[in-house]
Image (cartoon, rainbow, N blue to C red; front, side, top):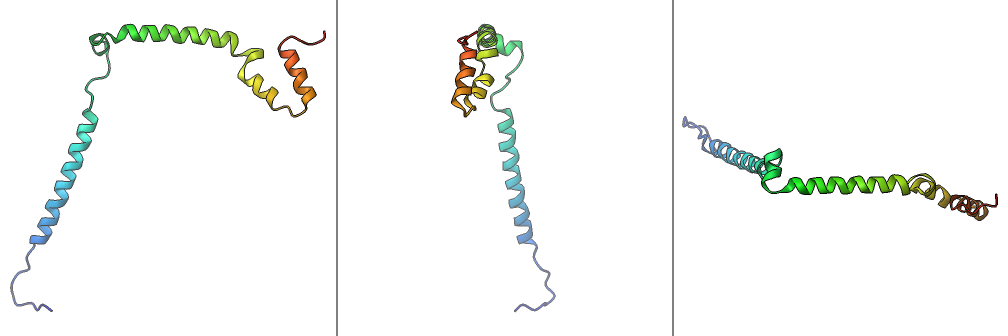
Length: 109
């Protein structure tokens, strides 16, 4: 047990703890800053033109447009996924067959 004998208490341990916390926070800030700056600039025309990416972007856009037109023609309406899912949910086989016949134009009109 310690008794007070008039000697001041040391604050060395408190200072060491503060220094340790400051060093941890410094490392965290440094890592966060490096993560935010990783990769450099990723936008703008200069970035696209510098690595010939503009042609690739135009080609992808045109292919996406073609795929969208194909989906609008073939993927909606009577052959669409929503219609197929509704037909698949019909438990009565006669109702399901009638819906499939109507879908593919095989009804007895």
